[in-house]
Image 1: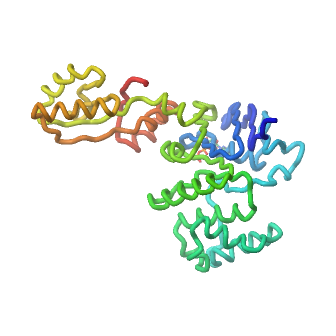
Image 2 (image 1 turned 90 degrees about the vertical axis):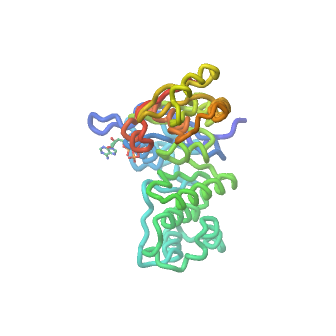
Image 3 (image 1 turned 180 degrees about the vertical axis):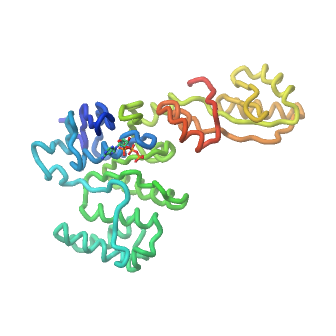
Length: 321
Ligand SMILES: Nc1ncnc2c1ncn2[C@@H]1O[C@H](COP(=O)(O)OP(=O)(O)OP(=O)(O)O)[C@@H](O)[C@H]1O
């Protein structure tokens, strides 16, 4: 017998007036996997997650969570599901532990030892008795995960958990999600960072303007990604261009800002750069442009504003491998 899916959304749509925020989305999340819903701002990720939690009702389509629909089971659909949409909210004048105790009480109490366990998991045991008002944004996000874990869920749903975090906060949040996944918990998270999804997810749905732009494994996604690109400045660009003829796998063209745009498999690019040095052409600057997966994300989602902000780059070159 095949195992019941954690989430099965079939042909789900939601419009706000004339805006089709989610347009015929189908997603299957298997138990035990980390599933990413990726897309730029306004792609429809939060609207989709809201429908899973029953916070809004789809106009059409079916959402099943562990086999149950809202129509059949009502709020019992959420048995075994926890998480947060947008940022979790806490009382700033209470400690982290007091906030969690209050939430546990509302849920009918937590089993002995659970509070300590969840504080340990989210790495807040040392700070649990300090007021939340003094917590960093990352600590509040982690406390939000702790609050979800108090329900001992089988499925954890996180809406952009790393949004607004500094690099250390992002690192801690990713490490936390990986720990939770390793413990067997199913995690469904939304993100607009390709690197986050690549690092922690098994499968991904990329959304663009309410629709699915890509759906598959991270390995499938990598296979579609364009080759890595670099901007290179040398002491003699004319000779560097001429030398490119002996490295046919590598594409070398004049790029923006007088740099040479060098594209190709990483190993061949390295060989080409070594050949430049042997020919006594020095490198003055060497800058990777967006990563191949970032480039693919921008291609799939047509997210030009985000892309310019993220990379300062204006063109995407390179063959599809
Ligand atoms: N309650 C609402 N009423 C009207 N429009 C809405 C409502 N909720 C969302 N939208 C619109 O639906 C679209 C999708 O929004 P949604 O928040 O789902 O996107 P998102 O992918 O989560 O974006 P973000 O990364 O910015 O959170 C947006 O254009 C948004 O303005």
